[in-house]
Image 1: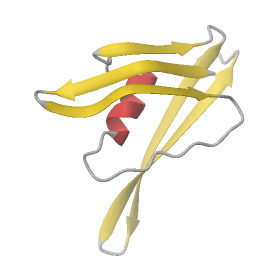
Image 2 (image 1 turned 45 degrees about the vertical axis):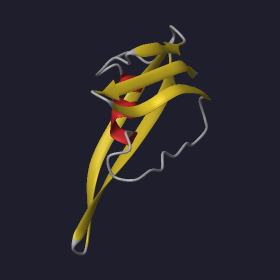
Image 3 (image 1 turned 45 degrees about the horizontal axis):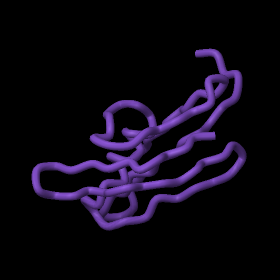
Image 4 (image 1 turned 120 degrees about the vertical axis):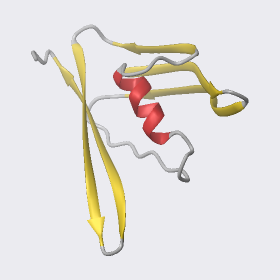
Length: 93
């Protein structure tokens, strides 16, 4: 389980997201939907610990690990980024 509690992030005067609260549990599939520049990738980076939120907490059980898989899909003349995030229990790197 990953719990996100009151997570906020700004870039200058631009509020990317504010007071995000959500709980992700093992065995479920979640999707992030938003416009370009809305902060989807940044939120995944906060979940993975790559960057820190300015406010709030990301809490993960000590026996769990987060794996983030990123791939770029090419469809005709445009491309799309696809993220896959897995939560593993008792996973050893």
